[in-house]
Length: 478
Image 1 (spheres, rainbow, N blue to C red):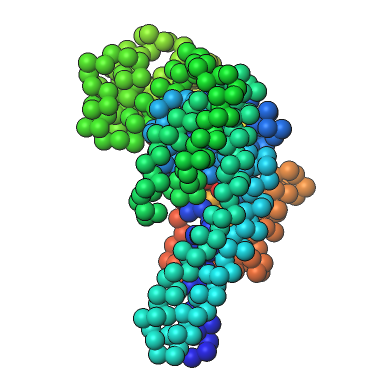
Image 2: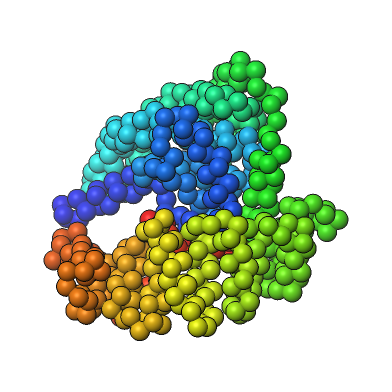
């Protein structure tokens, strides 16, 4: 009986702690959106005293309005936020706020705050277990279910001061760049109504970022003091925002919603972009290609329009035709990792003389920029196998499996590679490293091998930093 109670306490305590951890959500990769967000974010990071290349920006495919910092220097932005924001300034304001959480050391402080906040929750759990043991299951269940609420209330007491300082820092960062901080004020005021909703009905962002009236007044006062409130976004930034939003809506919303947001009478570039993508998503391939061609007629040197055409052709079974638009996108933005992977994938599928060698060069260049891109490693394995370089292909497969966390498969393919590769070479040493890291005798790996033992087969999931295409396929980024 006692052991069962202890297990119950541990289980419930673990459940309560989930309130303080970021939920596992699917990330999306898209060159245009990532390039836009980096262009907006890097100057703010510089002003904040951070090194831009050390900070990741991860876009999560989630319709709720949220943004947060987690797992070190990683800024997470929900697609729901990017779509709901009414201007680039609103998005920049939220990004500036989140950057302060990194630069101001809040991420470390919150670990301590979460630990402190959990103390009354654990007391509540313990009392609940005791009540159940004493024959009062109803009272015990009530105490246990309230534990996460106690923890959340205590946690938010610790974070309110940090939220205020992050607001002030965002205004400071933007004004230092000569940009208007009005977007942050507008964003808060647009969602002021969230304060009257219950926690269950609020957007996640406003559960952790409470919008008290005095907070909004303070932000407005700071923003107005900069004298930059009326400074408009540049035409370039405004267009980036409109095209990013159109792309997200085209890929993520139903054709009916796309037509409602961008009716056929709207001949603007963002509207045509959204409708082209929506037609592609609806498998109306010819309409999608025709619409993309009209965009390219207006802007033949737009790399993202070329990328879209290549994607439509590839995914409609016309791999050979997809090579040229993907090649053109790379000519326009040389070295873009996701473009390199798109191009290599098309070359692998076409398989003409010299294609595999070109694909290998492109993939190795991409992996210099993104060594943890599991999909790139998987494509490299195909390329190497098609060149009869099986041992290297097995190593690439091991790398791909390793970066999605499939250490059992990684170990199996690394073992095959070690057996065939020449000792002392770089590839041999890397395969041997993977063997060591994924060793079944390592206690940290035990759970993976136990799970494999209960499974009838293994499958390689396309997770990690993978699927580098505008299709917004759900992926898990490490």
